[in-house]
Image (cartoon, rainbow, N blue to C red; front, side, top):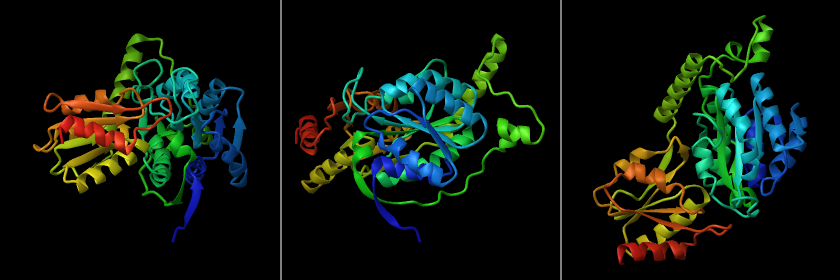
Amino acid sequence: MSERVLMKGNEALAEAAVRAGCRYFFGYPITPQNEIPEYMSRRLPEVGGVYLQAESEVAAINMIFGGAGTGERVMTSSSSPGISLMSEGISYIAGAELPCVLMNIVRGGPGLGSILPAQSDYFQATRGGGHGDYRLLVLAPSTLQEGVDLTMLAFDLAEKYKNPVMILGDGFMGQMMEAVEFRTPEPMELPDKRDWAVGYMERRGTRALVKSLYLDPEELERHNMKLQAKYREMEKNEVRYESYRTDDAEIVLAAYGTTARIARSAVGELRREGLRVGMIRPISVYPFPYAPFENLPRSVKNVLVVEMSCGQMIDDVRIGVGRTVPVHFCGRVGGIAPSVDEIEARIREITGK
């Protein structure tokens, strides 16, 4: 039987990566995710792995490219401005179809912003963030336990699709402490590394070439169509979400990550007063769960998006909802999360109750 352990968020995510088989970590420090590389620097040598602090985020992501090409499980972590610096390398990795796990413990922006929590990297994460027609598979946990489970899953998904997978957290999640349990994920059928990884192909005497450069326009177009077909497979198979008390709801909240925990409290408070409030929580923000928004119960008259941003997920919610019901917004920025009281007040304003 697995044991529940009280851990700090960043350290729990790092331990989950180790237990998922990550043996190589390349990164550069930036608040509020510094405990991840700090933990990895101690933990990886204990399991025969390697930790290396690069001279910059640009160097770190190119080390990830090299490590991923060998077929080993590799990871980096950073926070907002650091992920921006990595974006060119992430595009190369996606173009070369290599698996890796990226963690973004989001802080306020734009620019250097602050070291406080935010969700303002949603566009960057879900639209690729770098150049070219590529996508990341992006998972957004709302609890540390879910963060642990999704981190372990992320390594399998990265190999399944030969694509980077991002864990999208925030400063609250990185710094909070909760009890977590390290559970082994369900086995997944994965591609044979001997068919694509440099280290494994060389062992059987086959030469491997890992690249994202295609100078022939028709060859590059074929490669892009192959990538797009893979993203459609992700959209078919990897959508994850939670619906909470939506069956009879008159207003549905849309929230992810830490903000969803606050929104859930607001749902409970208003339900006790007789207001029919529900919530849809995207767990995968790419692929986005459009279906539950497309198929809202007839009772729903309004949708309220709640975020620690100026309103980034609202675009995806509107795509899902279409023109069926109005979509409203409640958000705070600068490292401030919407409070239960603020969410309740916004709901009363919208519903007139």
